[in-house]
Image (cartoon, rainbow, N blue to C red; front, side, top):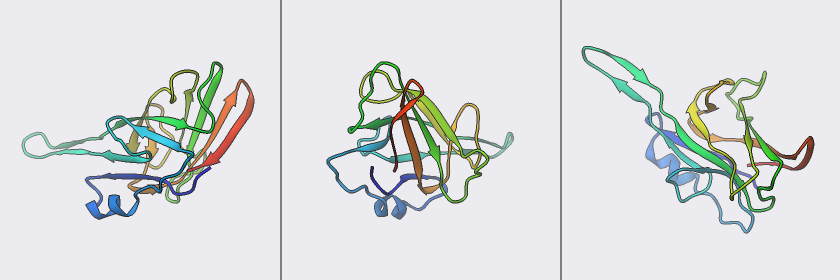
Amino acid sequence: MTSGGLMISGWLDSPSLAQEAAPNPSPLAVGLVVDGQSQLNTARITNIEYRGECPGRKAGTVPARFMSTATLPAPGRRVIVRNVSLGVRDNPFPFTDRDYSQGRSSEATLLAYGTKQELKTFSVIPGVNSFEYEIKQGDRVIDKGNF
């Protein structure tokens, strides 16, 4: 188990926030690996705002995978990650339930800005987010913690 959170940055944040949230090196790593990022628990989500004749907004998403060096993927395993950050709705907390049976991380989920549970994306808020996780083998919880 580690403390801290996932740093989410994008068009809503200042660049200095990403520098403040650099994770501390640790022998045990747990959290979200974002495609294209070499640091654990760091993401950049960019929303696009169109101006001119056809104004509008396109919500940005980034694929991320859960990993834990303490409890590795194995056949029959799943991981549930909940965003328990202050500022997100808690009935239920935004969550993702992913296959955790092969490779070194879970199947991908899409991170997007939001404050409530969504069907196609895992909601996060700009800044540092707090997560709880449970790794299950069938119906039995074999590891849990937060990051």
